[in-house]
Length: 114
Image (cartoon, rainbow, N blue to C red):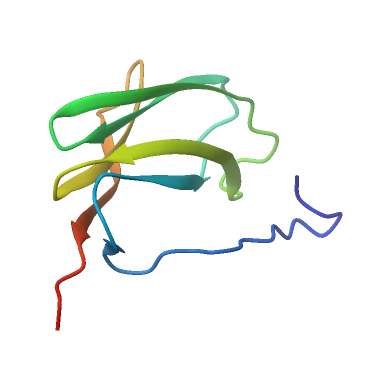
């Protein structure tokens, strides 16, 4: 939940690719999605998560904007992702009347020995 001044605390944030020490492994992941509404109409969004070509999760987001053009957030605090091969994690948002939007496409791969 945000603080009174709309700050969120993000911990253990990945930048760039996700490199794992061994496979199979399980990653504890969360998502922080920002949305800028173009109007104040309610929006029933679906967030789909893919690992490689496999669909691994679906999250429904009931978005109710209060201010047009103001950034809102959809925080998804924790989900577990078993990984067993080098592949991408892809997150796609969809809503009726809008084109699907890829909001994350990140490589997950095994760390190479030096």
